[in-house]
Length: 354
Image (tube, rainbow, N blue to C red):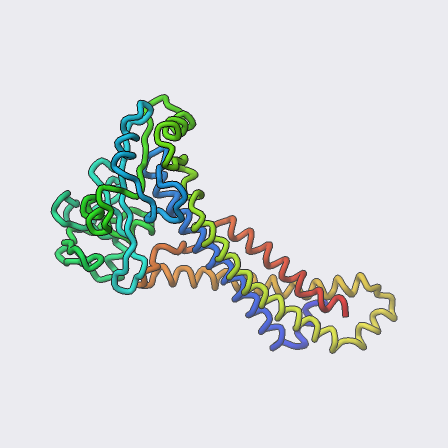
């Protein structure tokens, strides 16, 4: 095949180009999957809490910045459409090597505790300064039942249990009593979020209207759409695309350089092909085929590299363990393939215009 023969003339150049494309493809899959996976985990946790509506302070960027007063919580409970209100406090602090360690404060009336399966130790009891820690966090911190942890240099907690939830977000965090969380993070009697379960037969739309009419100073969202309300999540995902596409841009430059040099070194051959009847379109297709062939090989090599990177992070003892998916989801994979095709086309353009 003429395309393969042309590329084999400069094996080192072609090989380095393939490596560049492979790294770019792997970076795209790993970075985008990590950002999308984090958003997906937030959404899954909320869905598992079995609530139709999530209530937060209006206009906040992240869950732990939200504040709901006691009067607002009581007003929620008083609405005839509401069956149950589960309060949750969320704090972020530095713990060992993790500068963004999540602490969930949960009361006995929230289904958050039902998501946690205790695998070692005994369940959390209210009012006793106790903490349960996720399996992943326990392993990378080296903390287990019987240990004592200090949060925010204000309050110490006895670790009484290790739990698993199947969600990396929760398994990399810890859970304490909601009153202790309010004291530790100086919330007073406020909480960060409220998860609302509606009475049987009440539609979500009716529940949202009741909350908007009775407590207009809060923002209520369908729980399945709640994560999308945080602009910060959208920013993270967009920034991940930006970083990934920077890597792809570098690969495009490398591919363009390779193909341009290849064509420049074959001016006499191209002239001969034109002399025997090859038109510009056919020569352009040959160059384009060379670009797509290189990117296809690079993509094929980049996929296992991405899987290796993602699984290496998951098996590490760092704070990111279990937060990064071990494999890209189907949508990210399709986007990655599209990016590879575009890379091949764009990288061929400079050589086509020579």
